[in-house]
Image 1 (cartoon, one colour):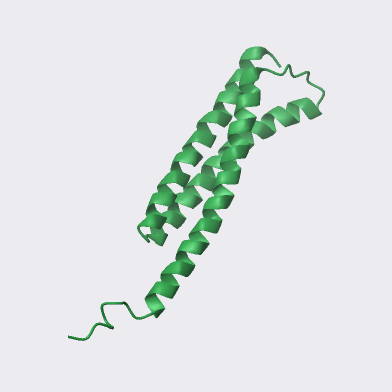
Image 2 (cartoon, rainbow, N blue to C red; image 1 turned 135 degrees about the vertical axis):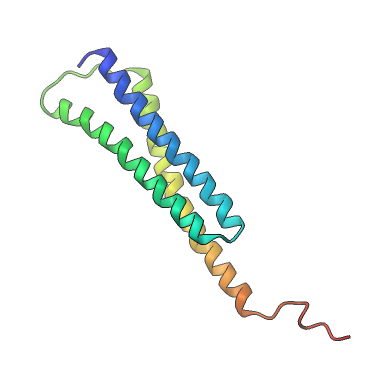
Length: 119
């Protein structure tokens, strides 16, 4: 596998991982506004992008498994790092969404301070 092919795969991984990260941050913004429908949509979109990044990564691994020599390039290291941190960020976003939902449920079930004020 030549340098150009490796670089193309690396940039595909970076592209899709970056798109995923953008969706994750948009999901966080939606969570802060308690828009869980939008946050779930954004997290799904982030997963779709991660799957595309993973497909590019799989091409590289399949070539390697078939015996193709792959020279490690710094851009490929960067791409792998970008992908793994984005995957971790998505896992954290899912956990954060669960927490936001729990907090909202507690807020919705408790009487507001305004309702307790008597004139």
